Length: 236
Image (tube, rainbow, N blue to C red; front, side):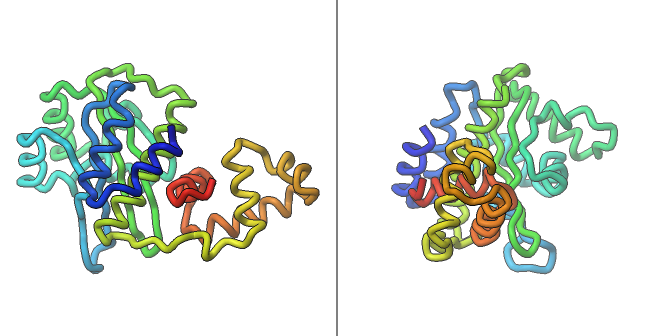
């Protein structure tokens, strides 16, 4: 599914098309709305940017008119995390501001009960946030589905950001050595460092060295994000 999704992404010509493809990829799991947003640090060019969003018009208008993108518990939490999280993980936080509480109430007025959020951290304080929401409070967010949804979200972010000009990406094939590419492909296959070392006749420490260098070259914070970027460029 991920390979097919990434192949279809290459045909998208606008961030909105990426969003439409993303929501189609996750709708069978009960997700109905999605949004992709990017944020640059204060003082830099750009500020908040909506990459894609298929929200109801009334919800989008309310969020924009009251500046709730900036005053949003999801964005606040995304700044603190690299791993994905759900609405249920943060919705009852005692530290929620009045604006954040209002935003939750407005989302629930549309029947939304839960959501999945994938932060994407980049150079210079860049933050991307891909979110999907569902009307099912007990949404299917078991670990295996979270991994698949995470990779879909990371690939969607990279293409939408690239198309919007928010974060142009060079082809990683031009930056990775053959060994770095080889080890990261084995990571994508689910192999441990020790298993990869045995396959390639190198030590697990050497495997970690090559994987970490590949991750840095891809400007990825985690191995999962690095694998997602390889998938996006058709290198798996």
